[in-house]
Amino acid sequence: MLQLNSELNLFNSLLYEKIKQGEELLNEKINDPDIIRQKTKDWQEESIKFLETNINEFPESLISKIRYVSDGNLLSEYLGKKELEKNAIKHVNYLSAQLEKKIIELKKCADYIAISEIINKNKKPELNKIEEKIDFVLQKLNLLFNDNYYSISMIFKFNAIKYRDREPEEIAENLKRRGYGVRNESWPANDALKISVKGAAFIERKNKASKKKEKTKAESEINSKIDSVLSKLDDLGYGQEIIFNEIEELRNLSKKLSKKTWSQLVKGKMVDLVISEVINKNVATYIYEALVEDKFKLLK
Image (cartoon, rainbow, N blue to C red; front, side, top):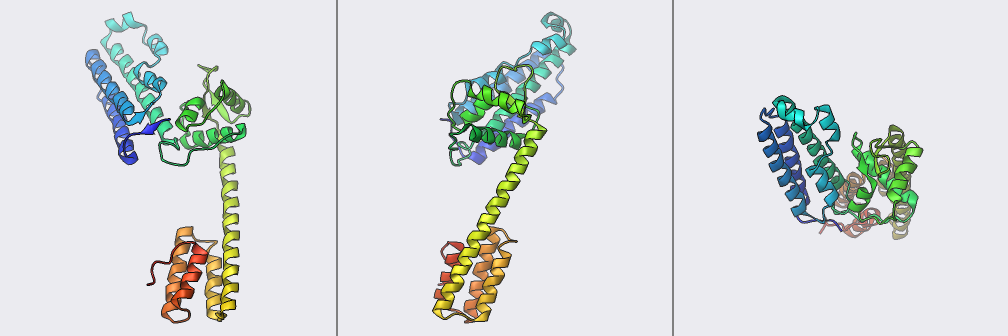
């Protein structure tokens, strides 16, 4: 399994510094083919060494794409190697185009890392059904949403997701057929894909519906907790109108505030009620811990 050997924030900072160095080299406008070739090689090897040193089992296929960019089209564009040797300007342009492709491949490595739940220390995805895997792929491609094509098998690898033989290619074809993904026409037989506008819109709708469902569930849970607290207070003899009004206000505000802000508000109201001697510390502690499900640490 892929594993990061350094602190995540530091790693990301250093990785994007490598990308920046490549872009700065590209912008130097070097006129000597030998110089740009050597500087490109140095930057390339430093970047590869950085990846291999900091991530265990970093995919060799991604390393190869940085080291050996596909240049058939580039050679054709610049009239072949023999012509390049005769024309320094075209040779420099060709080497600059190669460098630009290498930078793109390093950026794609950074993208795979950014969408890795494993490397980012999140919970490992437990995906068993094909539709779960398809949704996961679309969610990750939507986070990236650029003009690059990403290997589905590589997305799975960076997230420690198991798959059967040719499953990534079949998923790529499935998403293309549904209009949710665009396959690389240069390599139609592989699993490289980018999300389509239709696919992005589908994920946006799905995420919106999911958030609405989560919000409804959270509101229902808070309402249930508040009802339970009010019932308990009544049993304890704390049926004063001021307490009920304060708690009902918390009910209404729970729909408008973030969970963290609402929790802080609950704490503040409990402190105010204790200071004004409407309730004692024990009751305030009960109310807070029942609603927030956390220890009431402020009052001693």
